[in-house]
Length: 233
Image (cartoon, rainbow, N blue to C red):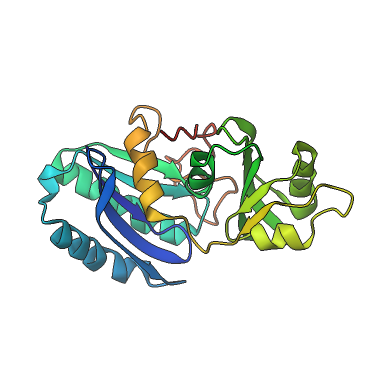
């Protein structure tokens, strides 16, 4: 399966083409940026497709991050994914940013819970908690940092995401300390592609995952969806 993955949810603009048959990305580019995704994305996708030496029609699926993240950034990536999918006659699927953060840690098949956390500002985070095997412990939600720290009840965790250090700095002194803190500004685009390959187009639409209502939200987008299962082979 050939997957084009796109991520513009946070502080990066990224795209990759994954060949699941070989188990390796054919091409991938990640450009760190806080803004300017709309201007950067299509040239970046064109460069990735040129390096992969593939026409869009050769793709089997297009995957894009659905959030949580920047409302504007999400629209850029998802609009591009849906437009390419429509033009190529291929399905588009969505991958949550929190799941993409957790996936590489789940792949290690560890025994520690994994807390994915994204800065939601105003002393809040978007977060989810999964077991080392990817099973859901706390579904994606927005919460105060104090509320999120109650996840310490699951034991010494791996913290990942752009708010990982925020949680680590305020971790309860009477709780087992985190075994790992990985404060990535954005998820690995390669893992976005792998999760996109595993996603079911019927249950993982390429639509924004809003855990907190944006200032202006189209009525057609649901406020939230159930947690995305993280299955890594």
